[in-house]
Image (tube, rainbow, N blue to C red; front, top):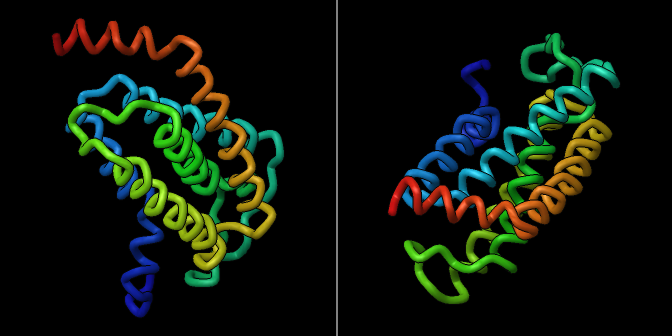
Length: 174
């Protein structure tokens, strides 16, 4: 990336590393099977989007910053799908799941994550266009994919997978 690109745009181009690091830190802090399940959902969302890309086979646009085109396919946008998954799943978890005992109890633990994650997700998704990695339709398709995947994955957790998660937490952490 050229040196004249603003820092905020450079950070948006590195969201994969930032989001992965924050997720790993949350898992290590809470030692929660639910957090691991959430992260596994993000990975599965990413993998399944990449499978869809191989069937759709739509090229990416020429990047505005470098003037080159990435060799991988662009439809749907993986970043947009996964960050939308993060936003939707986080909103569902904050609304319906109990607050983890290591987190502060109260309404702020339900509100602040959503107030941070949702605008961040929108910014990341739109940045895929700003950075020239995707077109609007590719980003819209990715966001739609993530928005549909998250409630399905959440429903699987609340329909019984959480029981296995509790068993694993007790087995590993007592």
